[in-house]
Length: 319
Image 1: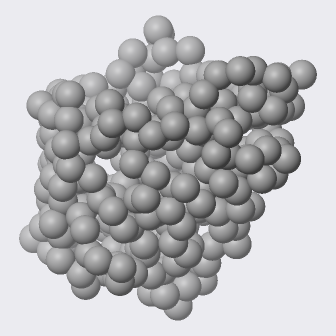
Image 2: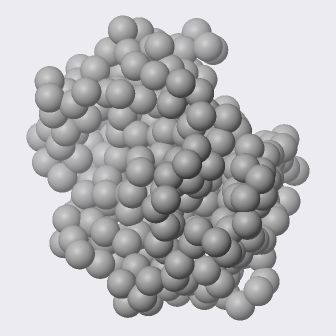
């Protein structure tokens, strides 16, 4: 089996490449400029030399088509595109172009080649917007509240449309928040872990965050990439929510982090309005019953487990 992972340098792309290699796949991975990208995550996992790396600009149809022809994959995992909700407010055009146009180009190129390629598209819990305190399921309507969410919702429906109109094997994985030590420092979970670990070692800095009352469903990235793979092993393409089903506030995440380090978070954390987004989701929680029933997948790691593993890795890196 041969797989093409678009966006292999990111958190999910790196862990997915590692998983596929362990299953005997030949893995190809893309980045906008493979010659200049350091692929630090692949290096950290010790697999950079085992992945065939190619340059691909997802917003360029010719680039996408050429990459598909060159790699000739059985499975394609489209994880690339602007990945920060906060940054999408500052770069809305780039966000919509890289996500929505990138997805369309991949779908159209696959249709053009007329080969039995199975496609996975990284949809997002951000598509739902605010749904109150009810866990979202696959039948819940989308009401996105950020340029990132709008882009992901548009790409999601493109995948569904091409699946129905042209018979493509194309799946949407509607993933809720999932974290790991491979998260870039700009993501709030990694920021919290890294700062708290420095404070525990004597740093006098303060951890500055935005709203602490937002509620999220945090899982472990390594488990979520397994769900991606399982979706493409089914006889019929479908869409699945991947989540833990557990809801915690950002304050809970902060408190748990500092508790595990033997500190009182109130002494080290401040809420700064400069980090508030123009609009934000106050509650985001998923129900993955469908994934458990059909894929045999369920989350084994919840928020406290995720925090513990991230702290362990953060401290080991600092040694």
